[in-house]
Every structure is written in structure tokens, then in C-alpha cells.
Image 1 (cartoon, rainbow, N blue to C red):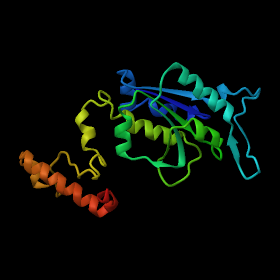
Image 2 (cartoon, one colour; image 1 turned 180 degrees about the vertical axis):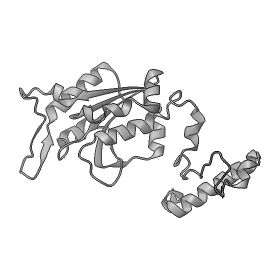
Image 3 (cartoon, one colour; image 1 turned 60 degrees about the vertical axis):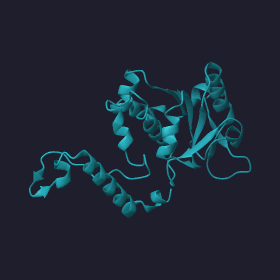
Image 4 (cartoon, rainbow, N blue to C red; image 1 turned 90 degrees about the vertical axis):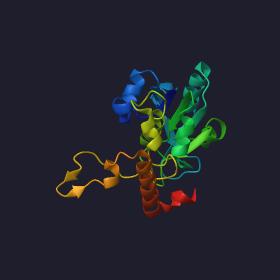
Length: 225
């Protein structure tokens, strides 16, 4: 998979892709992440990428020209499954969405900034708008990093144990069950006896029950789905 991220602040997230699972995925060539500074595509002599909104109002708006030029150049080089815009009013990002997108070959993520981008980009170029939550960030860079991380870790070969991702929270609309490791008894705090029996079927039943109960208590909304 190849992910192209368009941003006015590439330095804000470049280190996000140089560690842990994402780094290994890049080294194993199962994923590529390319950061593009939108300013590099501006025809303005000062590389300006924002301007005042028509009719006034607080804040600046990202201009259409550098964004359109950058996306057109990328699209001339390869086909993209989605051109994503990170936006507070986009569809809320969920694990099910990450699962689908992990099968894609190429995606573009456009990071919003200032008061947003010229609406014509959203109307004519963007194919999907995504929000990572009901709050506003300084820019879409952190959202792009979150989306990329969630997608890449699901790509076959990215994780040393590919089955690990199948038991993550939200994969089956349940939160993950509690986990324990050695020692089995620490200052009187004991691991549940069932986990020490070696009975695989009973352990899996216990894990499901714990996951369901944890979800019912903490995130009952997930059970509605």
C-alpha cells in the first residue's frame, strides 16, 4: 500500500512513521508513506497557500490551486482508491473502515488546516471525508497519522503476529478482554484461575464473556451496532 499525505506541516508527523509497526512495515515494503508539502506546489512567489474567505469571517482558507496541482500530479502517476480529506464534519473513523481501507493499493490523505480548504476541492476532488472524533485539532496532520497507523498495522506482513490484530478492540464491535502476564500472583493480586488451566475452549469462552461485559459496561453503544 502507498499513502500520500498532503500537508502544510510535514514536520509535524514525519516522526510518526519512523517507529514500531509502521517502520517495520516500510522496511518490509508492505507499506509506503510519502509526505508532500503543499507549499511546494504553490505558484505564488511567496509559496502562500491560504487567503481570506469571500464575504469575510475569521480565519484563513487553504487555496484551491496548490491542492489541485498536487493531487493532479499524483493522480497522473497512479490510480488512487480514495482521496481523503480530514475534516471535523467527515464520517467518524472506525475499525471497520480501517479494515476495508487496509485492502486498498493507493490513497491520498489531504490534511485540513486554518479554517479549512476551498469547498470546490471537497466538491470535485475529494472522494471521502473522515473525522477521528468530535473535537477540533490545529490541523489534520495528527488525524492523518492516526488513520495511517490504523490502516497499515492491518496489512498482511506489517505485524510479526498477524492474528494479533484480529483480537483488537472494535474488530467484532467488542472491547478487548483483560490480559495478564507473569507472575501469576503479585502481592496477592492473582491472575484468574481459568487462564492457568490450559483449556483453550473454556478460556476463549471466558474471554468472550469478559469482552462482552466490558463493552456493555463501558461502551454499550457498540452493542447496538
